[in-house]
Length: 345
Ligand SMILES: *Cc1c(COP(=O)(O)O)cnc(C)c1O
Image 1 (cartoon, rainbow, N blue to C red):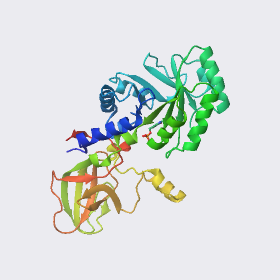
Image 2: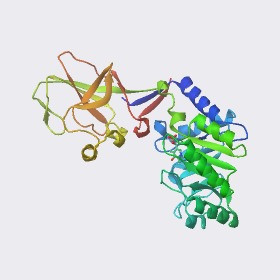
Image 3: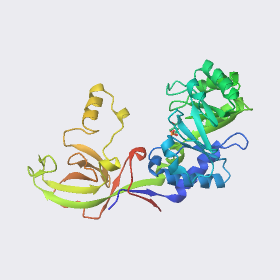
Image 4: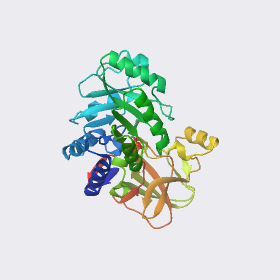
């Protein structure tokens, strides 16, 4: 009855160990697993447990990153430290010995307490200090007796070695370069940085490549909940739309509440296309919408936009294509899908 994420446990864990192993150089920093949002499809609590396993395996995993302060409770089982990626603000009322705040404004640095990571602004232009501010921040942090855990550099996807190197120089100039936390560098770029700056520990923060790095270890299935024959011109669905041809209405588990039918805005290139997508919740209005459900190698069409807990699909033809309780394969975006069940096989 469920939208289920199937995990080939052995293969999935092998990728975790591989990525964590590649990122770890004893004494020079290990991976900081990122567990945020929907937990990359797995849920935050499960990722916290997996991070504990990596930690116990001696792969240098002593810190877990979450996106927001609100996510801290969900990863409370992690036995090491937690760093929050969103910047500290005066309304972030969380403190603790095992908590590391990310700070990117001088005004915040005047108030925050405890352990801090100083974020250097990158070409992302999301959060952080300019090069000049980083120097002031380092001085202010020392003055205030804050425990500086390092400098944070969040690079755009695809990294950029030249930019990383420039930002490392800024950290050196500010004299807060013992540990630099980096995102979105390749293993080769990380190795190169470690070679160039032998006295700096680099800590790569990795989410996607770790949890979702081996897609072959993952598959998703939905269940057929109902099947009805329909004649050409016969009405169906919330809007009383007419069937374009004779065939079958198939109801499958998984709907908008699971994130089914949401598409990535990045995939739409024209301004007009983006506007239409926003207006229709990620779907076109034609009634010929490709769904994420597959029957063998046939991609199935939505009969109408997905409902909250299930989806109506349309299959043309006379022979009944599927039966109640059959499984359909689904191809979804893991970071925007809430699964009913996760099955480790
Ligand atoms: C989300 C995030 C990451 C992890 O990104 P992935 O692409 O999932 O590896 C790393 N660093 C920061 C600051 C982030 O916000």
